[in-house]
Image (cartoon, rainbow, N blue to C red; front, side, top):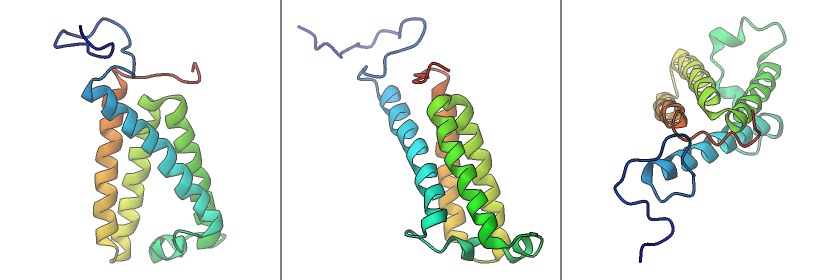
Length: 148
């Protein structure tokens, strides 16, 4: 007798596939989906509380010098954008994942402009690739949890 979650080697049915299905692709989507909701929101909130890092030090001087209100205020705006990006992933993962990928590309450029933090830029490139994978997986597994 087959297990209830065993969908076997057959092709998936037309339409949306239940995330509870024991398929590696569905599991990968769920892992990336939860991660790309939580991580931007946590990083965004920390721009206000500074528990994880002093985020101001990551702002390239070329960028900071052009800001009318200073780097710290800008980093708080960055925090709001990150929180919103995580919420967009929650509502529309296929769209939100591209928003997060674009945001990570901007962070990478900023980090490269500092002349330091190449290791963090490389890590963020990996995250960018993960966000693109989420966007692609979202074409097949988009739970639309908020009905949007």
